[in-house]
Image 1: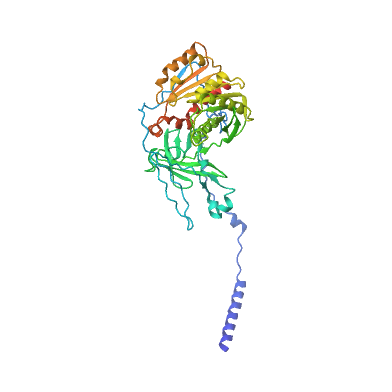
Image 2 (image 1 turned 45 degrees about the vertical axis):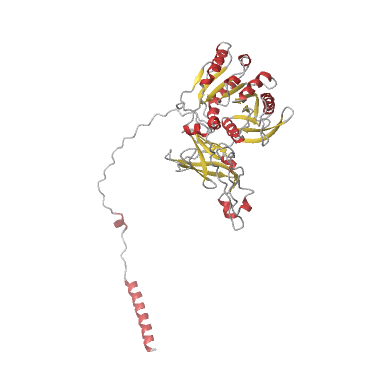
Length: 479
């Protein structure tokens, strides 16, 4: 107890002593004069810096709308144009005996679901993937498809279309799943390459070295969605050192039914992304039962060039066992399609035309000669390998065409059309008919030529090459 009190008094004493000593010390304040006194040294004046001359202002270019398509120089109406930038002539290759293996269907496996046995193809049977799948985005995977699928989902049909880069480069995704290809195709308008896409995931597809091979992988396509549709994709290939992000051109499409002669016809309209008052084109591909996805691919290419289009299914092609109709029936259906297109509010009824493709060119010519109810401003006749010169109308019928015609002659062998071209040149030079003749040999790489035999021209038509060529001519006619 005594020791504790001793320590307490000792601490108290020392604390009081420190306080007394601190109060006894006086600090001498600094004089204001001492604070302001500084040593002045001689300052070196900065050197004068010569200013750079002001560059002369250059005249600013006129603003260009970002979505406006590039317009090529108009085609002449009094000359025959030969596109000489085609690749060397390659001998036609026979159709392969074996069919390319289609992309296998992705099957979801769970404890209560089992894999179904793979169907084996018969020697004369082609198995293609016809049923679609729904691709889901990240938030659907996190919160469940049952909650989000009704609001945020899109199908693989959205993958196909025309995708455009900032430098007017067009990359086309072609839906060829129901054809002998069995998959989506990708065509690059810059490199003129055609490849099949192999599914790697819901959004990712790989690109092989050719249309026949999937490995080694030379590139990839990753689709990116916005809301309920595909907006763009990421393209990475060995040909380019950087990735590209082509943006999809969302044309307005609709499947329609319109009245024909003694029947109802099934058709498809394709309009540019927005606006109205467009030039209208009825697309006639002949009485052959072509794959509808290829037809839609071409009409999308027209709409990307601000052309409204209407295509229709020929008679006899709706059933499982198609029986193509006659040229006379096709002509009647073309007349009905023109009347229906003229009634559309987005189309200028005074700027209508026909596009005859292959056998459809014959029906288009007969429609112009026999139809007077709907005024026509122009016609495009694309003559390719699916048509023979001896099936074309005679010179007397061609001489009665009252509207400008763009004769676009393409295919592997354009020399077979030389007598017919001579006839057209005579009508143009002597009878002063407004005929424009363009000879465009099939501009395609070898893998395009090998892809579909004599039908390979369809691939190039879908990829907007011919649409771009005809666009400048049509604009010059209807301006």
